[in-house]
Image (cartoon, rainbow, N blue to C red; front, top):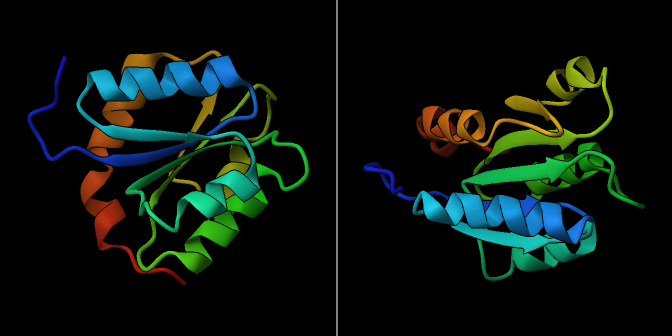
Length: 131
């Protein structure tokens, strides 16, 4: 299972180790460069050597939640990544959209739908400028 388009660099941030790693493994099967962080601090530290096209963020992170992490990523990076919220909490889709997320997924989500969303959003993700 590989994609015919340019591979994406994806930062997966999830405090649950199995969820983060399995999501990254899925993305790697499609040829993408996926890296995992378990906290907002780890995610921000990863930016020293990695500029993601996509940030797939668990909303329910301890400490700094996914909404605040998205804000920090957009402020820090030279270009705005495609922002994808992932949560086990229902009823956060409107808040995700209002916070600037491009896509919202409720756990458990369909992996094929995630891959299609990432690949469909790739051009706009690269073209956006951080605000």
